[in-house]
Length: 343
Image (cartoon, rainbow, N blue to C red; front, side, top):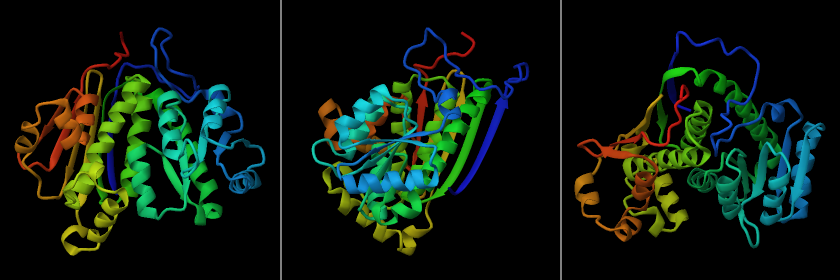
């Protein structure tokens, strides 16, 4: 995922968290989600949501053929999948993108709102770049093209479950951290953007300072900033994604990736987690823009929604948004809504 560096500063007087796993939750604090230790000790549970019985049976067969002990649940549509999630413990969901009624996008949004700790994998017949963009923008943790289902599905699930175990262990460390800093330099590649967003989500979940709702909002703001760095910054696709067909938008960026002018451009992210604030700095190698001229003229909510919906989402999720003078580096700062571990 490009070049990454992480610097952790644990409290010198903190007790050794040891290897005993438990949920780090204050009983009076509402809205926190975690992967329970008991969910990782028992065989994993996977929910497959697909309106095609043929594709459902195929996915179930691939999973249980490799891991017979895994519990695999099935849903014929989105609403049935949501109902199962409300009553059954599930580690990960595999969902078809195109379904009648509640499609994969709508299903994913509902899961993010109601079951934020359950990762979703999209299955689709779309091209790689198109679905990579879909994953990043919607919040899916990964995707599997239908033509590669046999080769990739189980591998993707293995990676997600390994990440859940890592998150659980990370909670034991990060709750004793005074300052945590991570720096990344990635290619202009949507799959690397998706992987970086997933990493940030896991790190914030392990940090245990945000409610699940706030964590989703902050992760979404960072996701939006990374997409802006990719599309508007490095690839210089200037039209708003919301006003252009997604396929056209992604296609323009894909074509420009082979142009020597754009090919070598990188995206850089620095994340600093501290007890009383979080800072995210995202920079690209594009020419930048005049942030004051563009954003200074937006005076109403309608202006922000129409002209700069991505900036509005970032502004609503964090306490401070600022650009450097060149306009190719964005800083997001979160001060409100942080739970103090010593309080």
